Image 1 (tube, one colour):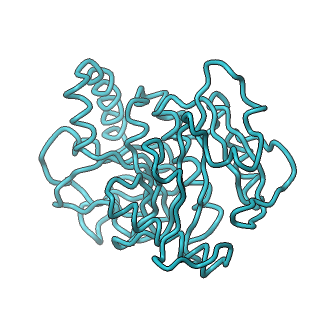
Image 2 (cartoon, one colour):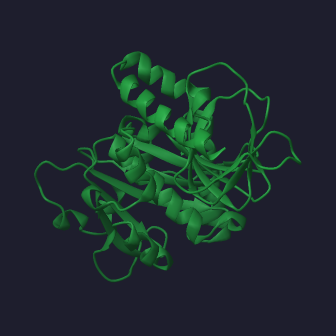
Length: 303
């Protein structure tokens, strides 16, 4: 089944995040004392400036990451490391990442990196200039490739007892394929609305005849576009290719199936979000339509 990373939008989802933290930190990692209500949260979770990324599969939340936009109350990481001494005092906006937890069967460097990158996209859409991320030392090299800088030696986070590395991302230094894609295609205004989805080789991303409600950008992996399950592919798509865009503009069903031929990571934009934005910002439609037309022309030339 697909695995999706998105922002928690309902109180029920946020409550499930608190229960997940309790399960992971209290029982799996034993870094907190178990609570009678089986939930783990603190004062920062009560602020309107706090948001949570969630990892879902089969309608179950299996991971989360807390995103804390700076306020007059600061961010959680202020309590155990002086991140601010590395950040200019003027014309900056800070966001902190923390409370990273994923159930054991879904842990891995790819998941951790994807969640941090999704946090960075959220930061950009909220005009954040610097992202604070106390991270697991195991993913330090991966994060350094996309622009994060290590600020000091490993330290022990006092609340959890976990060993972390203090890292900082200046958003001007973000070196990421998808981030560059949205800039080149003038899609920055949609960056915070995209969701990250993982598929296994052989899984359908879209199926012929189903109602289309999302468009996709391939980040890693390959897919085949086919008319029938056993037919020869019309074309194959790879990293950087886009498919499903017509679903954003029409009510038609899918004209073909798209099947992952390798393990796949895509970014997905829903029709609902796209149409709402264009209604509110009609001048943005012109650039998008031009870019979509060019991609459709290039695809037709491959068939």
